[in-house]
Length: 319
Image (cartoon, one colour):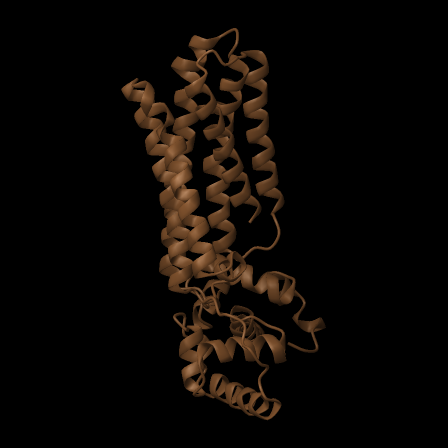
C-alpha cells in the first residue's frame, strides 16, 4: 500500500498544480517545477506497488528504498542547480520530456508485472483482485495520455484534462472499493465477504476442519496453481464465505496463508529429500507459477530463504 500511496500522492500534486495553473497562468514557476518533479514518482510508485503485490511483500526491501532515494536525489539536484524560475526553456525543452519518458517507461514495466500477476494465478487470486489492479493501471495510463496530449497539442484546455481524468478514475476507484470490497481483502487476493451475522457452530466447524485437512492432504489440492477459495469450499460442501470465516475464526489464517503453508511445508520436504532438484523446480512442483512468488511465500512462512533452509537441514529437527 505504501507505493500505491506514493503514486497517488504524486499524481495528486501534479493534478493540483495543473488545476491551479489553468485558472492562474501567472503562477510562480516554483509550483510548475514541483508539479513536474512529482511526475517523476508516479511511474515508480505504480511499478513497485505491482511488484509488492506480485511478491506478496509486507515489508519494503532495502534495494527498493535505495532506488527511491536515488530518484529523490535525481529530482532534487537538477532542481536546485537548474531551477525552473531561471531556466524555463531548459525545463520545457528537455526536462519535461525526460520526466515523461521515465513515466512512460515505468508504465510499460508496470504493465509487464501486472500481466505476470494476472497470468500467475496466485493462491486466492480472484476476479475482484484482477479488476482492482487493472483499474489502477488503466487510470494511470489515462492520466498519462491526457498529459501527453496536452504536451503535444499545445491547446490550453487540454492542460486540465489530466485533472479531469484523475478525478474520474479516483471516484470510480472509490466506488469500486466501497461497493465491491475493502482494499485489504482485494490485495490479499480474497473474494470480499460480508461478515456473517452469527458465528459458526463449534460442532460444524470442527467437522469441516477435519474434512478440510483430509481432503487437501489426500488429494494434494494445494499443488494446483489455479486453486481458488470457492473450489476448495466446494470439496467439503460449504460456501466460499463459510470457508473464509472458518479459516479466520478457528485457524486465524487467510485462505492464501492456509494454502501457502501446505505448499511451503511440502517444499521443505522436497528440499530435504530431493537434493538434485533446483529451488525453481520445487516451487513449480508444489504449486507456484513463478520463482519470485515461491521465494516470497517461503520467506513469509519460514522467515528464511530456501537456500538458507537447505544449509540448516542438519540442524533442523522439524519441518
